[in-house]
Amino acid sequence: MINNHVPSPSMPYNPFNTVSLLKWGIMAFGLIWTVFNLHESMLENVAHDALPYMDSYVSKFVSEGRWVNFALFDTLRLVPAVVAGTLCNVFIFIFGYQVAMKVRKDRWLACCFALLVVNVPYFTMLFKWPMTLIPGTLMLALFSCIKDRYSRPVILLTSGILLFATYPAFYFLMPLLFIRQLNEENFRSLLQFLCLWIAGYALGYVVANLSVYGYTLLQNGTGHFIEFVSWRKSTPSTDISGIIANIAKSAGNFERNARYLATLSPLFYIPAALTLVWALKHHLKYTLVALLVVLSIYASVIPLGVKVPLRSGITLPLGMAMLILLVPHFWWRALLWVTLFVPFAWQMHQYNDGYNEKRILFAEMVTEHDTHDYLQQPQQFRKIIVSVDETKTSAYFYKLTGSDSFKNLSNLRLHYIKPYLYQYGWHDKDIMVKDVPRAQVLGETKVEKHGDRLFVSID
Image 1 (tube, one colour):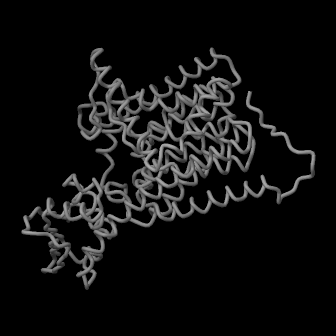
Image 2 (cartoon, rainbow, N blue to C red):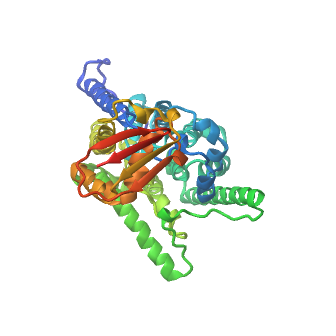
Image 3 (tube, rainbow, N blue to C red):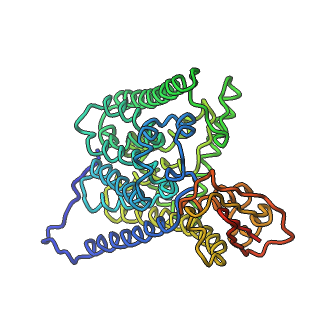
């Protein structure tokens, strides 16, 4: 059983004792770094296919089945990026706080835990599509607050339907809301919960498919279910060898996740590994639930062989973070928190720093000779034509940044040129990008106006 009551010394409470000072220091450290990271995450333009830059959500809907996002498309796309990003992070903080309070009623620990959750680097990746994530993060916060008001079947089945309709990976976090209760119950109860959890996922998937089928039937006269886009690399398993291949594929996705989190140094995770060994011995059911959460997203895609993007790997860092709430002693918890917060927050910073750097370099290059700010005045033009040597210009930016993003030639057009123009109000139909060979690329841009057309040459 998890004990919420930490023995206190017989001496009167002293706000300036060592433990209290350390608590305030940890909180200040986490808060300052979090504010810096959040500020950095909102400095540059959102992702190339964020809602404001889409004319329609239909293609996303029929390939993902997220019918809540589809229904709210016209409203969500109007939310300013900074407001949307702030809301997403607030909702994630609420979720983390509620999870911690349900395990160990300690407000200081809950706040620190929530700050750790906000700094999970995969959330900042996801929030480059902040308007899309508002419904999903709101659902997480809402379910964490009302979890005790309704029965488990109601919460799990309802959250399965709604989270699959917003962002399915969030559904795999739902057991964290029940982890303390499950730790105190028998294994039969744990098995029943597991079956309900799976049923909620299956129900969400079925409802999403039916929504796509119904929509396509009404619109086209012929209905079809979710059809995954090519980058998800779906390989449905039809036999044992297919299942084995998809298990290996999911294992590779998990390994990529773990390697990314360990980029700063794997040594940071030694305290978590030792705590896991201790937890398996003393709190087996709690630890099993945390491990099931970690592996759930990778197990769920085995039948269809869908690729799990790095940004969807939220279950691994949150599963590790749950160990902090389990250990009984303050110093142990503080060590675990610091050794998880530092690599998570550093990776969040590194991701945003790299994301911003590439876009700032590109913006500086294309605006240097735009003395009349034509690029920011789409209302004056019927068309903008950008000529660029995609191969040499990609190589030029790769040399500057070292980012593998520029190894994919289409990224220059899709992730940098067009999004830069989108943010000023240019529409995709009005943008033409021509791949024109150059003898060499020096990183200089010419912007010329010819009637109602704007010509941009990247040389």
